[in-house]
Each structure stands twice: as structure tokens, then as C-alpha cells.
Image 1 (tube, rainbow, N blue to C red):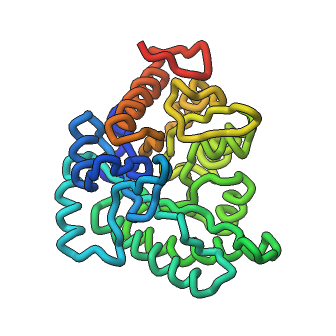
Image 2: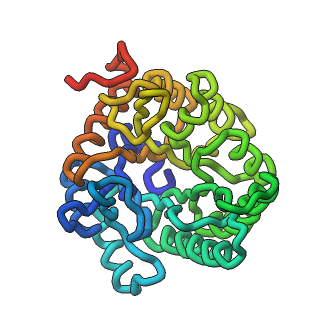
Length: 312
């Protein structure tokens, strides 16, 4: 973690993402920053968008955020001042409606432009990591998978030298392991955002999940290639998965094994909670539960008997 490195305690390395901070009561991003900081979290992740949402009834409620095409320099300056409440921040590029691997060349160009702006924004606010989603298929247009992977590689090749100049580790979020590895094998220095929930949903087993850690943190070739962790639980029911669950609802991920393996590979980067809640206050409670669990496992004071966490 470039700003503070291994000097941070495990508790200080855990933060919360705006990706699951819905503006249920009309909150702004500055309100969310204040609430998360007052709850004792040392880190914060910004998804720079006003058009991301996950939860709400009867319609989704947009998450707090900022639009980089619309924001003025004074808006970013004010946001940077607010972010001074934290020891570190990260940036996670938005993905709803964006696709750097789209068949549509105009959408690709627009996505590249916005994603480049995400890097500029990350540098402006002093972010310690930057991650993107892999570009996906285009509905209604069938093409070889290799075409999509090549387009994802092309953007990674474009942005990596710029990120290096800014001193910001960068990578794609998990994702299928074979796709992440395909890009990383062709681009030394490219990393991953290890979203634990997403990776488990692709891997299906503990052994296959741990292959992500072994591939990107457990070998010399991939040393320190995990640029950040996205923490969330997964609930398996009726043969389907629901990710972004609080630890007490998890029944899929072996959190004990996951965080012991990360600790033993000397992972020292940010751990960002992406956990559902009906409003910001509830999300913070779920993330506090996660922080307590992760810190207990990391320090060796917690031995979980089940895959779900039982708060004291």
C-alpha cells in the first residue's frame, strides 16, 4: 500500500466501497465519507459514477458517487479534502453500461476515455490502487472469445504504463481465473482485484478459489500482483449464488482458510468491503462485522466453526 505500507494494522487496512452505499435517504458522497470515517474505518473506495445501483424496492437506489465527465475541478478538490479523513483510498471503475471490449467501436472509445479519466482521478486523490472490470460480451453479437480477450488486453496495455507513471497498482477484477491469467501472462506487471465472492462463484470449491491466491500472490512470478481485495460473503440457496452478503449470511466461502492464506502470503494491500445493505448505516454495520471477523482470523484469535460468522 504505497501511502502507508505494512505499517498499517489489519484493522486499518479494511475499508468500504461506495459500490454498496445507496443514497437511500438522499445522502451525498460527502455524507457517506463522514459516516464511514466516524464508524472508525481507515479506508474508502470510490466508484466514480452516479449511475451504479444494486438495491432498492420497487426500483434501485443509486449509490453515492461522482461523475468524472460532469465534475468540475472544484468538485474534485472538495472531494479530496473530504477524503483526508482516511489513511488510504482506492478507485474502482464503474461497469454498468461501460465495456472496453464491446463490439461497438464507439462505446469502446467512450469507455476508454472514461476509464482513462478514472486513472487521472485516482492520481489526483492519491489512490493506492485502481481496478477495472473485464469487458464482457455484446448481447446479440456472437464473436470468438479471443476477440473479447484481445480487446481487454489492448486496454490493459494502454493504461498500465500510465498507471506506473502515477505509481498506482492496477488490474482487472475477478472474474474467471483463466481470463485473468491470460491477460497477466501477456502483460508483466498487470494485477488483479481479488473479489472473493465473485471468485468463489466461478471456482465453486475451496481448492479452486485458493488457486487465485496461489497464482497472483503465492509464486515469484506473480508476487504482489493482487492490487486489492474486495471482501463479501456468498449465500448459496436453491442452486444459485447471491454475493455481497454480510458474513453472518455467508455459507459458501471458507473465510478462515481465505484470510489465513492471504496472511501467510504476506498480502499487505487494502481490503475493501462490498456488502449489501438497505441504507448506508446498515452497510456500515455489516462492514464492521466483517472487520471484526477478518481481524480476528488474521491475528489468530478467531477460529470459525462454520462458514458463517457468529458475532459475539
